[in-house]
Image (cartoon, rainbow, N blue to C red; front, side, top):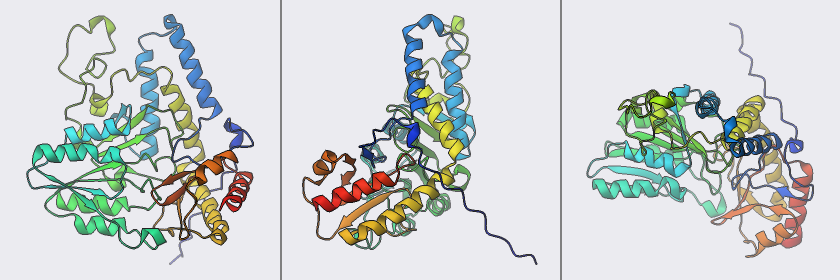
Length: 394
């Protein structure tokens, strides 16, 4: 029998700083807070504003063409059909759409993670209160303060039961990058008849994801972080068996025949096919959609696998360099490769972030973790600047 060879590793992506408008004296290591726009994406947005300034250049087909392009690019990124994707303004809008279309009975449970991002919690609290159900918050195992473990997957799998109506989760926690095995969780949800709702704002674009493998009922991702896109825009994947639900809005463009502006007063009960009924009003955003399109095209060209491997290698090197300063991170595979949440037993000064900002270094603090999230626009000089600033201020 012929031995199988291991798949060839993806080529590391060299620093792409030239594509971004980042001054040399700025080390932006804060993608999990907000990604900078690429120069071509920003230019596309400005061109969109210029078109709106001259509305006679916008024709009825333009209300559909850009959203169709963006929808397909996002669908290709996750292995879905374009008709499975709705365009939304935010993660909270997508979560609210899911909550409005999932049945929950009295005495059932909705599972969330401790310290989960609020947008993927508040809608579930409202839904549970209205249905007489409960939200069950899963507390991580191990000792987060010592970065000794955070087995979210095991906790979720153990908690899922016949009482579970919905599991609402991320791919990685927004505070420290601790990882959830979504394929395993998806299989457990299907086995128990529970719905799976995912907020992938902190991972999609930097961590591979395939809807056919995970099979969520709904999946939401805002674009302004790891998708390198604009603020106030996101995408909502809706599984085919959930696409006959009720949208949050009853807009004209989501109705059948909306392409014919002359006949919009011939009101239609039927919607556009698939998940398009869940599109936000005024989805034909003439300055934000071109930004998202440019970003999605570039991410597709780089390849999400290559992005993940590149960032994983850089973050492993950074963990080693920060160890002499007393910082520790969750080990892989319990941590997403693109994400670092660093903790220090001795703590850090209360004004550390302000001191780092004064030195041109930008990171975040979430809970007791310093969150350092680089992307392909970073380089060795950025990391040297970070290390130097930390050494000078600890």
